[in-house]
Length: 346
Image 1: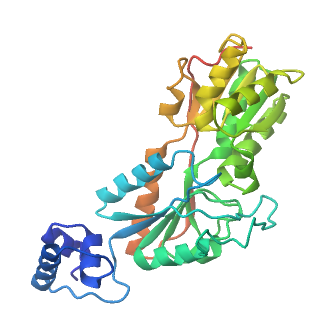
Image 2: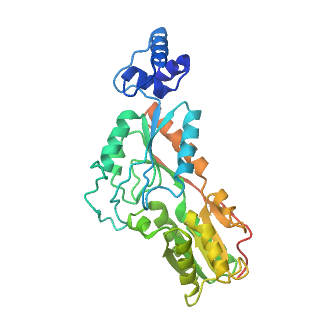
Image 3: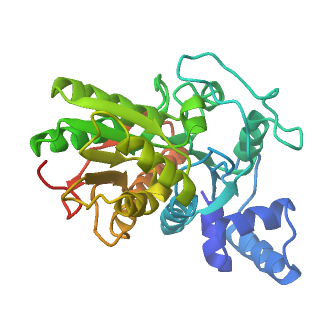
């Protein structure tokens, strides 16, 4: 049977362009429309309701405390992988409020609607109509979108508390937090701290942030370490405040793990301005992409967040779901810690 991809290949355009040209959903130049229609006639293609569009929907919310730390990198990884599979990407970045908190009580600053009156679920439904499958980011432990996603072609870039019936791919963030605490214990550190994301990220129940905390604190407790967790907003002023607060603790930590990508370099600068040499006086590790860990003057020991691999796997799973019903499942990448010059024995 002739597919929309076959028509796109004959016409020399993307599958999404074929969909738009034949459906009239978006303006297409007259020349392109004629080329698409001619290719469809030559191949005997007949569009029908529910026909594949060649488009993947990427739900990448932006706004205070929303979205992955590097939304541009996450989007690029998905777009690059999708193009390799012959798909275009529909990017939805609408802001929203009201993810469930970790305790499962759904709280909202308002009624859960966006600034123009639409709900997050409205956008999900619209994306489903325009895309063959969804890739969902910024996943909460008890994400209110999950009931609508079960049974539909969708892949979560994140792991909710109850993933049954869903396809999920992510870094094993709990194991990443554990790995950092274990390595610091091996180096002889007895007092450690975790600098996490902004408080609103935890309040909204963002799964990756909570899983790092759980892994870090559990491993520290098993190793007999004194551990503390410090959410922090980003920016130089916040970095100075956080560094000062950590150094005023009694006992003060001899090692810090950072799970807040934009804060990593400013925090290291703040520690050094306060007289702490890295790693002689204070060891620093991070959970972040390699390019972030390599940015400071002293490259940082880190568990890498493999953005490109996560995007590629999510797209591959989404394409597999488009081709037919697939068994849902959880795909977690094991953490990989790379030792660099920012950590040393206590």
